[in-house]
Every structure is written in structure tokens, then in C-alpha cells.
Length: 425
Figure (cartoon, rainbow, N blue to C red):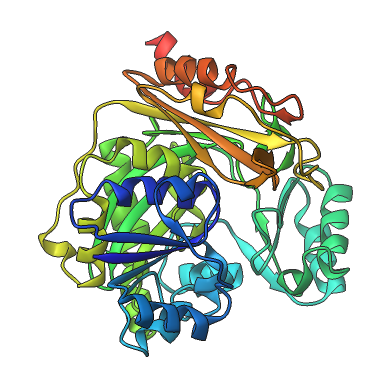
């Protein structure tokens, strides 16, 4: 098969690494990719927001499958435009991608199909939103309705924080994404990420993970796109997975089909787990980043076979096998992140840091004058496996410490909840 992978981050490097291992693969292209992806695929300089250009490339190179990594093109309808050209694509339609593209759409779906989630209100003007917040009180959660690169959510512990978050949304801090906001009740419990491979009819569980959103050790500081993750998530017991499928995933699949937008692709449920069971925080309609990196390290089966089964509507006849090991990834970020990252600093020792059970996935990197340099906020994903999360954590940090990048930083406590559980057991 000739495969085109769209995207340029750590998630896409992990997908490229796994796809490249498939015996089904003839040629892998990636657009625009990054230097790490370039070791697995032929990089293509192409604007992936230009759907006609993507389709033209697919025809020229006889592409058998397009795999869409990031959410932006999916919400913009690239899957629909490629399918209209009879090009096979892994990823949901524009209508189905609303599950990520509009938090309000997803909340309304939950209300309609009795899917457990936080109580909420939807607002498109500042005065109404502030009145709701004053009436409800803090803590409370403020979310920009649209795509905001993982930064449009504020968990406001005080009313002043909530007011400031609403001001930021309506003053344009998140562009069009903040023109409408969702205000939610504050939920307590333990967060988990749950993935399902979907073909429009069948949803097949595709692993669990937990990530660390806040920038600083001890889960402090502003939210980021994710500073690290590990898999599996201990809180997602077989019973909790069964409940999540029955109470959240299956009603969503039925609801989307009834709305004329059956969901096919990867469905990523952000969950809050309490003693009352799972509640949906939000949906993403693509692999998580950095959750994808740990999932790909643990996946035993051929990813390309699974993606084809999803595209062809064959998941009812498919199973997925996982390695027994745990996996953990630590994000190395550029100074300034999650604000404005400093670009251009030289990174050394990446090749030497990789080894048995350790993969270094590139996220925001570039080559400048023959040197590897930082070219984004989240720059490298140092990813390792181990018999336990604790062992994977030690291996990942040992590898990270072999990387020479004075201008980079990371959290030093990724996996702390799971490691504490392991020590207590």
C-alpha cells in the first residue's frame, strides 16, 4: 500500500513509526512531516489545508490510504473532500468531527442521549455567560467552543479567574474558537483518556492512557497540549471500560448515526472517573498527543491492518492485542511554552538517547544548517516501555538526561499517580 500521513507533530511521528513497520506498506509519504518522521517516510512540502492539492498528490502517487493526524483538517472537512474523489481516508467526516470542533455540539448530544457529563450552559455573549457564572459560583470550568490547540479551557477556582477566562474568550484570545463558550460544572475525580477505533457502526476499545496537562511538576501552572502521558491508565479497570462503552461510547455512536453523521475514525473520550462511574469531559476525533505515542509503543498488532478495517467497515470482525508492558512519554518543551516558545536552539544527543525500549518522537523540530533545532512549543517526546509504569518512567528519564538541550525543559514527575499506586500495592 501507498500511504499518505498528514501532520507534523509527535503524534504523527509515532503513527509513521508504527505504519512503517507494517508488511502491507509499499511507500509512506508524510506532509509536511518533521525530521523524525523523515526517517520513516518521504516528506512532502504541501499545504494540507489545500484539500485539492492533497487530492491531486494522492492521484499522482496512487495513494491507497490517507491517515489524517491533526484535528484541524478533519474539522475543515478534508475527509469528505478526499472521499468525494474516491480516495480512501482514515478520519471522520466534517459532520462527525463536530464532536471535537464544537464543545457545545457534544454537550447537546450528551443531553439528548443521556450520556453522563457535567452540567453546562452555552453562551455567545459575555453578559449572559458572566451572569451564569455569578449564579453558579466557583470552582467552574470555562471552555472556548471551538478548536484552540488545547489551550481554550480554564479550570477557574475563583470567580475572578472565571471572569478573566470569559473576557479572554470574548476578547478574541482564541480567535473564532472563543466566539461561543461552554460553561461547565467543576467535576472531581481522576481523569483518564479512553480511545475507540470506529467504523461508523462498531466501536472497538483502543487502549487507555493518562496525560498531564499542566505545565509544572505537581500539576500546577497553565494548561498545555500535554506534558507527558502513560498507558495503561490504572483507573480504567475492565469494569470501568465496560461502563464507559455502555454509558458513553455506544450512545454516542447511535446518536451520531441518527443525526446522519456516523462516526468513523478514532474517538478519544476524555473522562472524569469518580466512585459514581465515568463522566465525559470532552471528545477528540483523532489520536491524542502525547497519548498516541504511548499507545503505539504498546500496540502489538499491525496498525495499518486496523486502520484498513476501520475504513472498510470491518471492525465487527477485528480484535486488538496489546503488549503487557506499560509505556510512558515525557515531553521536552521549548523555553516559553505554553506561551510563546523560543525557536532555533540546537538539540544534541537525540540519536544516542534512543535504545532498547526507548523511542524519541519528534514534535516541533527542524534542521537548520545541518543541526537539529527547536521549532515549536512541544519539541520532543521521550518515550519508553517497562514492566511497570515506574520502570518505564526511570527508563524515559534516563534517556532524556542523555539529550543535550539547555534551552529545553520538562516535568520530572510524569506518571506520579500510577507510580504511587504501584508503591502502595
